[in-house]
Length: 89
Image (tube, rainbow, N blue to C red; front, side, top):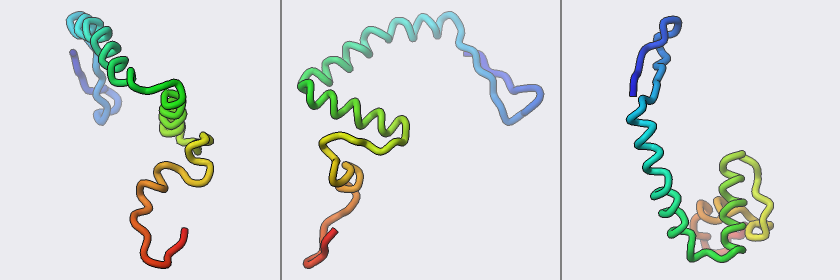
């Protein structure tokens, strides 16, 4: 990898990947893909669909419209914390 400060804006650092770095990334591509497949192998089609929907929502910052959170988003449920006696949401 090669780095250099931008001549017109010293806050910027310009980076270039060299041949050896490109080869390393190429060598890692298949093992990383295989590892991801192994991690997701236990999910059925419905779970994969839910995962994709949630990941797209996080990436695009759009509200999720999946069946799993018609009433309340997963994040709301996770961060809402325990209810006090008599409290409703």
